[in-house]
Length: 207
Image (tube, rainbow, N blue to C red):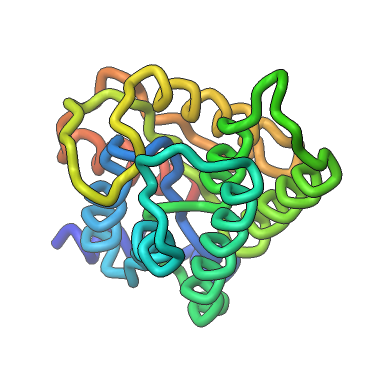
């Protein structure tokens, strides 16, 4: 029943949309919510594999990285994700991560004394914005709100770091090319069902 309602709401704009992406810091419930929304809508769920990319590179997401390592691994993460999104073509799909997340993780490692090639950073940020335009019609930004759960192989479980990432992502979402398609989940919504209903209600309005 939920699937039929969801698809009915989306039928008017489905042909013109590519992806529905969930962005935000790690451990905010993006993957769980994205899977729930894809099931409700009856459309494919594309689960990205950032942790796998780190493991293949012999890195732990929770460990400090040099800026050169961070730039290299974020480029690998983006390339791997694009390889997952690309086969969807113009079909509607839901994904648990977007390119803007990847840009934020690079920017979060840069401080005042960080030695980095500014052109390389600018190029990467430009690339993630372009990739977001290429694959996503709507972005849902999920704030840090649910209880934190430690899990091996994931990025550092640091609430201040996660808040830092959240606002970096929010800033990237303010890019002129993206801002009209970004919807920020209210902080007080922590229940999965409430989150799903809020997202699908937005999609119904947009349809």
